[in-house]
Image 1 (cartoon, rainbow, N blue to C red):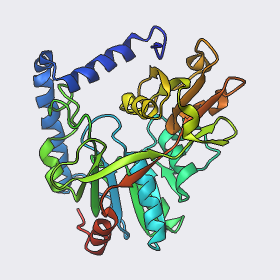
Image 2: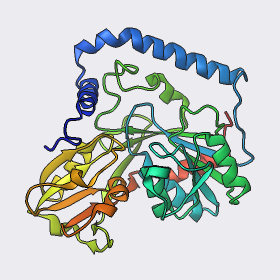
Image 3: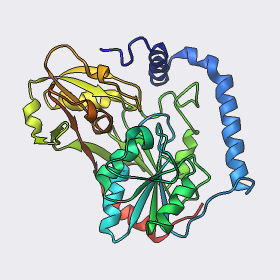
Length: 341
């Protein structure tokens, strides 16, 4: 496996800690005091918002928050895309607000377009803007960005991407996505474990969406499906069957890279895996692999790597969310009787 950043010891160390969270390594007990401090500070912060000491931004339209209680990716972006399509079909004019992690726009609020640079707006917001068909705004102050969607862009519903712990933005519906394979790891708070909040937080949200694995009581089962792969940079579509027996360099800079590698192996590809840190800032040298095999990546990686596409065969695999039960009916119920908080 290629080192994603050459001599980047920090990235390798972080990857080792994440692996320990999900293996249940006992040495993490040494981090319990820091986890206790993390719990104290986050609990105090939530209390200050509830008491009104810190301002909560309230909008005149429904706000749906899509988030998780673990660090790293769990499948939120496909859920946001599914929501945008569902809400448009229901007659809403939704918009998406995001912090824009990893990006530095010249000014905020910043409207994301297909021509935006990932360094300015972040990789996930750019992907959302290219795929969703609805306005996408990034702003570290999500309340201000959400207000811009409503007042300047005419949205009548706001989807907040990865905003569960952002208490400055009031919300009516909270949806949490969990990785059904890795679940909550060792169930410990950061830095002793992967949790941003206690597992009890799941009992207070409106729906828990289980991405892959086995859904448990009360969870809504969802899987990510691929219908084909596309070339870079032209976007030409190809059948998944063309990957059977083919050796591919698989590149993934997401929260759980192994999920992408497993997807390709399930399609019959001979996978040469290359895991990168989540939100990795790619350079051309990151894509220099020996041989002439096809390089395949996630769609989130593709928005940052398309500029490096050249003579070497390269592509990405877009995925969509599929619910195994009628989650649409549950969402209609929630929209009919939202609970502002």
